[in-house]
Figure (cartoon, rainbow, N blue to C red):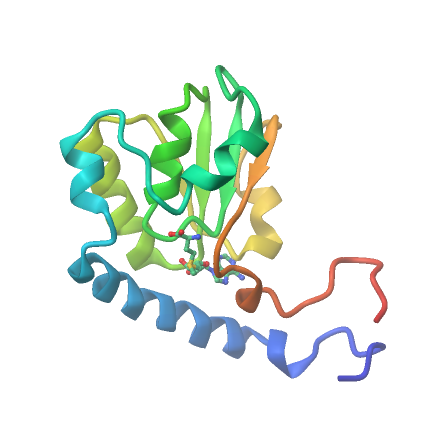
Length: 152
Ligand SMILES: C[S@@+](CC[C@H](N)C(=O)[O-])C[C@H]1O[C@@H](n2cnc3c(N)ncnc32)[C@H](O)[C@@H]1O
């Protein structure tokens, strides 16, 4: 990749469309695999195994406003809300992932907002500021563009 190229092929609109379709397909596969979803529905204080190791690094989330980037099915998002967070917003470009995430929110009786932009356009998709910006496993492969001002 030429670092002077402002629109590398790996970040074209077509690339993001393929990426979104891939994650739309995976959402159904992940739900069918279990993904710890029933545990979250059955136990009101349950948190995903994927989230637990990182929680001590986040400090006290009581009342904190939090945005979860590339939240997929929203399982970690539920776990974060259960730490006592205040406003919680999940961001993901896969509409099918967010459809499943909204179903989980209903079943868990949680209060979480979901928005569906590409993460590069996320700032324009919601109002307000956040105390915590969270993202975790498996997200960097969906972010082929360098941050603004970065030259590699
Ligand atoms: C590996 S999953 C995240 C899994 C999550 N960490 C978990 O534990 O459940 C990656 C997610 O990132 C989303 N994603 C990938 N590229 C994105 C982008 N550029 N903008 C927004 N969401 C993106 C996908 O739709 C997918 O839901």
